[in-house]
Image: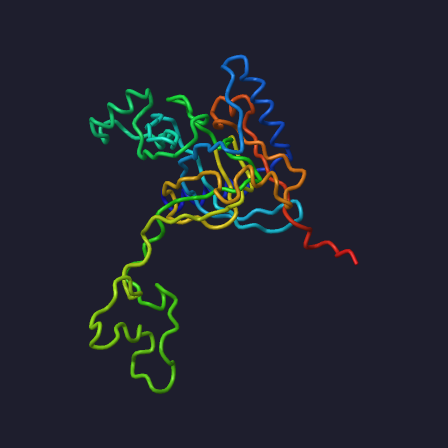
Length: 314
């Protein structure tokens, strides 16, 4: 995507009308009622359940304002043709339960740029060729039928998510930038070595530099996980997920989004900060069928904390 088209996309997002205030549990109930006659009884969510994640693309950052008028920096993630290509069930020795995972693929691409091995894999799953294939560990009750297309409706405004991506590569960096070293003196007693790492070894014994010593080297360009990002808004029309804060990686890069391990749906239901907020999540997954029943809407999460512009109670 060129810079001009990227800025036009951001402008369109900024000019979209203000999202309607819709209780997300009502949205899920509407979708479940509409699809109950066409599908068999789906398993119910339990505190031990672990859902699959999503493969999304980072579209850039923008800003939003909540109901209190507080400005929030958000990263826009777009779910692009994310479909299930396989369900993995691997037996393990007792007393361990079988390893279960859902394999997802996203972002369609042409057949001529796909290897024959992957073409056969996609044809077996009944999906078009994809650019990226990833596996998400789940519990056995959270397996999703092969070929199912997932939607941004999979996540709920107000819940927390973990995002995994490759961080920005910064090239060869010194110890002050890479490891936050203090550096040497900036004025007296140092001859053109102000940003030097200093001593790296000891004496004749041991006479070497220990492995793992923090030194200059290549910085960034590695798999990075950012935990506990708050979902601010879901846009079903454009399949967008707005999360509070920064996400690793360049624009248009693929990222892996899943329920937060430390602040997952069960922890959110019992935490003091969201008392009275229903955070029912689609289980086992939020699909395109649910999105078709709900329609193209934008759903905002609740305002967090006190209103900073209101007077404090004495």
